[in-house]
Image (cartoon, rainbow, N blue to C red; front, side):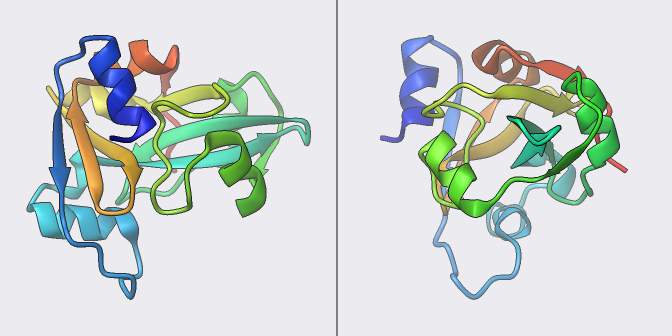
Length: 155
């Protein structure tokens, strides 16, 4: 079990875990998940950690087929500017390795913004905290578990 799965269980959130054989040579973790689980890319969401205004880490959860708008995420996180966080900062703050970063069960709870497109689906998939492992849950349950907000944060 990962911290992400443990959190969903502890909070009694309806969820399912989906596992697939991760191929280290694949160029995109999220697109690999969509292909191997045979799920539309729009329903698989990736977790991106950014540094807002040079002082605070925040999380953007967006469809794997989309690009993050740094400007929109910074605004949604009540800041002016966002840049991708360093891999060291990501792993240290979340407790997860790159490619397996989940918005759930992070070591340090970070301000989290989920792209508004998630609300178009009854369920979405996010990393369950390990490469090759996804968790399916409702967008509203994800929002509750991360104490986050919905906003348009893609380009």
